[in-house]
Each structure stands twice: as structure tokens, then as C-alpha cells.
Length: 181
Image 1 (cartoon, rainbow, N blue to C red):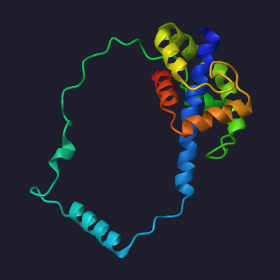
Image 2: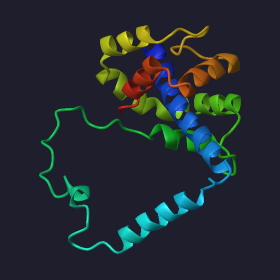
Image 3: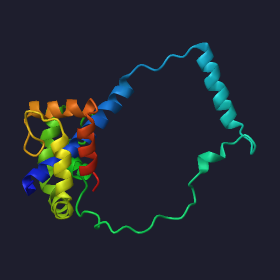
Image 4: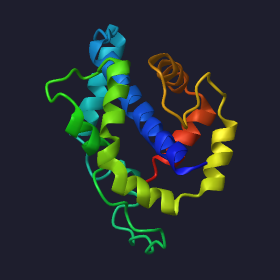
């Protein structure tokens, strides 16, 4: 994988995760409120009442497990990447009054427009990338007509977005690996 392919993979991985999240959030917000039976409402009310009126004897102390434990050991990981984050760079080129879930083709256009602002971050990540690991994850992804390591057309982008939203495990693993910056 060369630097240009890495840059495209970074942009696409972040864009897939961010746009899929925005679209899923919009679906939740657009969904009708749940309807409950009388028995379900009574059960919810009882649980709510129990939580509000918890005593020392009835409190679920396991909920606090891990709080106050020693901090993890310092990491030998490379320093954080310089420059704006993906979200900051994308926000710099998007319409501030834009929709919660923009048109996927427009979103991809904005991602490509944000690329110059990400140059310091991309250079740093390229220098520290585990390229063999990324190549292995990339090889495991079910191929679409257009590779994630090159500029995508609107149709190619839609195909990758559909695969990600369908929870393709290999694609999710690749996106997660790329996004650990």
C-alpha cells in the first residue's frame, strides 16, 4: 500500500463510520415512539421506582466496579497525530446548517475536500502505520467494484456504505483498525 492508497483508506474508513452513525441516529429519531402494554408499563414503573428509592441494601454495588482503580500503565504508542481530527477537518468544509444525514454523494465530496486539512495527521499516521496488518485486514474485506484505497464514485461509495451498514465483519474490523488514531 502506498501513501495515496493509505490516505484514501483513512478517509473512507472514517467516512463510513461517521455517516453510518449519523444515518442510524436519524433512523432512531425518525422512528415512532415505542408502544408498551399495560404490563410492560407497570414493569418499567416498578424498575424506575426501585432505582429512585434504592437503599444501601438494595443498591447494585457492582455498578461501581472499576471506579477508582489505578490508572493504566503509560503506553509506548506513538504520540497523537497532529492537526485537526477527521471530524474537525470535515466540519471545516461542510455547510454549518446542513442536514443531520447529508446526501451520501455530497458527504463523500466534502470528505475529499477536507483531505488537505488532514495532511499533517495523514503524514504522521502513515509514518506509524502497521502496513502489513492493514494490508491483511484489507485483503479480508469482500471486494466491491471500486477499492477503498482509491477515489470512489458515488455508486462505489454507496456500495461500501451498504456493506458497512449491513455489518460486514471484515469491513468493520478494517474500519476499526484504521480509526485508531
